Amino acid sequence: MNRAQNPVLIGVAQLIQRADDPADSIGPLEMMIEIARSAAADSGAGPAVLAAADTLGTVGLIGTRSPNPAHGVALELGIEPRRLVTTRVGGEMPLVLVNDLAQRIADGESEVALALGANPLASMMKARKLGIELDWLDRGEGEPELMGSTEPGTHPRESQHGLSMPPEVYPLLEHALRARRGLSPEAHVAKLGALMEPFTRVAAANPYAWFPVERSAEELTTASRNNRMVGDPYTKYLNAVMYTDQAAGVILASEAAADRLGVPEEKRVRWWGGARTHERAWFVSERPELGEAPAMRACAERTLGGAGITIDAVNHMDFYSCFPVAVEMACEAFGVAEDDPRGLTTTGGLPYHGGPANNYTLHGLATVAERCRAKPGSVGLATGNGWYLTKHSANVWSTTPKPGDAPPRADDGELTVGPEPISVAEAPEGEGRVESYTVVYGRDGQAQLGIVLGRLLEGEQRFIANLAGDPAAMAAFAAGDALGRTGRVEPGDERNLFHPG
Image (tube, rainbow, N blue to C red; front, side, top):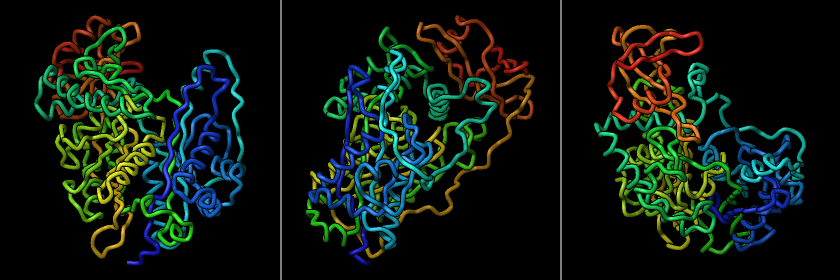
């Protein structure tokens, strides 16, 4: 193994902005510039690290008109990286970017690389409400190298029936997991509260958390004026929070470059490798088993196997946690108990730390790295998830070199995992059985839309439909246990309808 080319994380930085007046806020490019400088200072080597950067990658941004944000950041920093990268949409993409940068360092194609991301959605939304035009920096020319998939997360058929955003889709996955586990709604909700309560404790102690408030399991799962039901079984406190102003970034280098720049040993966190995968059945409605995530399991196996360890060797874990089902499935994939005393988050998770658009996992990785530094020799794991348990990424870190003779690698081979997608009836008609469901509620607490995925009793073909009936009937449907319930499905002009029996 060529130690000189081994990738090490040498600098981390995070930022949180709470501007009472959005006119006083800074935009994503300014946030990333500040992050880059702070991460360079954190490395112990200062501005020389930035001057040495040959690669600058930015996570897909919201809130900038720049065609090339990476170039804009480089201009403001006064540096000239030869490679500029911007990711496409996906919560898994920051770790995919980091794994790519690390692999290129390991291959001798790069020596120093920056991965930066920012999210100013809180200030953007506040400015829109107040009618304020934000004067944020927008620089950058040319076209960056684009990384990631352009495939949309939902099928037009799904969007047509109201499955277009995470708060509508993830509840369906949650109920499907409940079906597989054979739990009653009451028992399952109790488990959700127990799962997420420790996340709030971590967030309460995290200076970069958007909602640093410790809450009980009961408070998290009980619908109230401040915690309305969003999509059954998830209350507001169980939903990821995108409207934050947060930024994070890391700096990677080869061991040789870190030596040359004078980076102290106590700042170095070694990359042991990583992996990424995605589901063959890309769209949720086409997955044969709604409560399974085979590609996540494959990502876990490849990540740990490539690092040459088992999950028992990991001390610090940050599982992507947009909604509870993502955490539950990650626990299954990695072989971790949901009450593991090591904890399942280093930040507090997306509902409490905040889930800043595409960039959450850079916050998770930065915190994992800090924990590894604080306990030399310990091992950290960060994971990412894109769309609807569709795309997966992970990597492993430690202050010590990877064990064994095999060099660290990013496993990108055979990305597509899992069973073939199944067909979905375009105009289903006849008796059907509910496989999963959710009822979506408005801010007034009234049921607005019921969504059902099920199977026709004749032929077992999958269908997607909306619940027939008024808000009271929808709420009554959700109040019971609708899993396995039968009813009549009929095609509509725009949406199929399910009439419960």
